[in-house]
Length: 265
Image 1 (tube, helix red, strand yellow):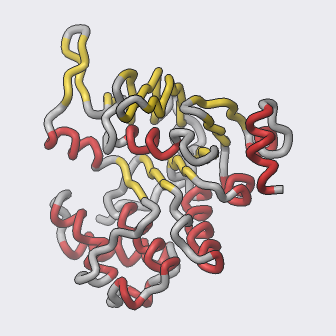
Image 2 (cartoon, helix red, strand yellow):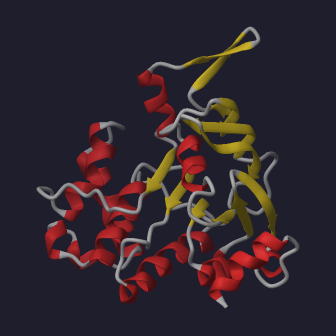
Image 3 (spheres, one colour):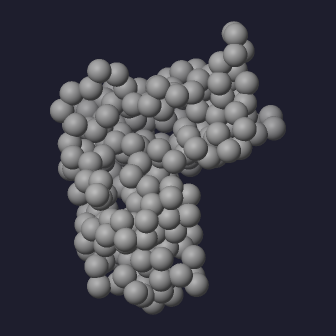
């Protein structure tokens, strides 16, 4: 039986994501300088900040596409990328890390669709090849997802036959096809022409309304106002400020946040 698309969570006993004292450097450049963040099931957290503030690096650390240098990130009660042996964290095997990533979907700036596969084939590849689902089950869920993102009629099309906005919506459907507990979005509209941004944001707003846990790195202030449960502002590798959208976006407490948002007013 096809699993349902998640609906809005009302209560939760504990956060789905728990990040503590996360540090990450590239050479001499310290990008993350001790990030602490909890994300609750069903919550949409939008992360804002200038380029180079560490937003995307933090997102990639959550699913261990980047290995943090120090700290801890737990998703669904599991330490991402490591296991505790005695008092020390030891890195997991590549296979174990891949298993952990199966609970996390990610949408990047670029669509990364396979050009030689149809839309439907792109979406069902991971559920069949990695998760062992039957083709019938995978296709049924893929078609339900395409309906959700408004692309049912494009199931047999190839990526080259789609607009950028349509390709990104397919990328969203593909990420959802593994039935993730958590979705990560890394500037999902930054590579799109302005007239195509709205259709992608509309699909993401629908997911937020349905209660899928989401962390979204974006510069789309309007999306943050409409869809976020919480806005996090990062600068210089730190979380400078966080709170409800009406507080952070309308009446920010920190001068750095005010200066950043002033560019969009």
